[in-house]
Image 1 (tube, rainbow, N blue to C red):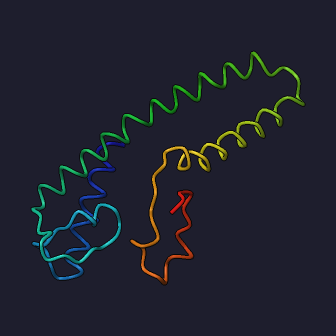
Image 2: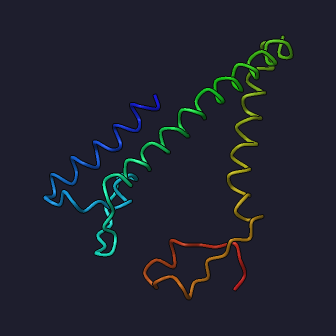
Length: 132
């Protein structure tokens, strides 16, 4: 997994550079599957390979951790959830808590974007929790 992820990101960046005819001009945005044209972002291909390796390393570590936690949680579910009617309730409760956390965590973090820093045409899109 690690090697295939690293090589795929690196090869994708190389092929995209060849397609655009700028083989020596690598930008960090290629790793994120997007392009940002900036004249100051000329980066060596070996720097891009390092990013691809680190991305593959993190993915290779997080995969087994997720599998271990999932196996542990399933063993606990087998012991605790004996009745069939408890399983949909547990799933619904888990979904509700997860959705609530994703919705309210930005509010509690107090990360504000004030409307005077946002262009007028995007102010309706960027609604904030913070009072101005």
